[in-house]
Length: 119
Length: 119
DNA sequence: CTGTATCCCAATTGATACTG
DNA sequence: CAGTATCAATTGGGATACAG
Image (cartoon, rainbow over all chains, first blue to last red; front, top):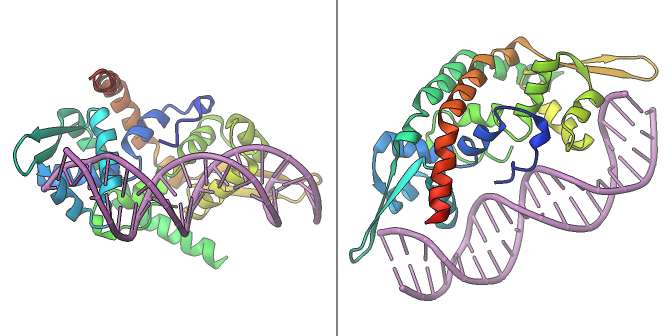
């Protein structure tokens, strides 16, 4: 949570950006949204380059923010399942909007980069 | 640009998140959108906690991605103006959507945090 | 299996001073 | 004014290894 410093920016989207677009949050939410409720290891395999430490940190943050729910089953071996909450799922249209923008404008970004790097 | 590592996440929003929601980008875009074309120092004062080094870095990135335009006037003293481009302005509806989500759901996030911290 | 504990490294950030 | 240079500090992230 390194973005928290700055209230004086008065940028209204800053708080939600901090919650939704912190590192690893979108891939985790995406994995949970696409493949439904799943266990810690499944998530870890899906996000192949994440370490257990970091995955735990991000899941805890998402759980605290109410976007993800954690269910602990006291079995041997222990079983823990994560799923997206209703609140988390409410981000769906926003992500769809993001994809729409990307489809429409990412090529322009690419062109701008090429032009910039050429100049 | 620390998010670039991971293609295998297969999270479709990842690329656009990297472009639009890197640190400082939303406050900068917001300031340019709200107050129009302005000079380096004006921006620096508006984002009161940013250092010139970081502001330059972020502006260069935004310029490379085509979201911000830089105009250099060869005067004494030199004058440089930054403004949002059409491509940058095309993010407007997306930010509006973000604000809508925030208005509707940030209270729920706050409640989830309180509950989590209490538990 | 589901994490936690350490240690370490890399990358960002910031403070400060300085230049054209 | 509009940055750049340099250096210090912090932090997050990764690699293991290990515990319940």
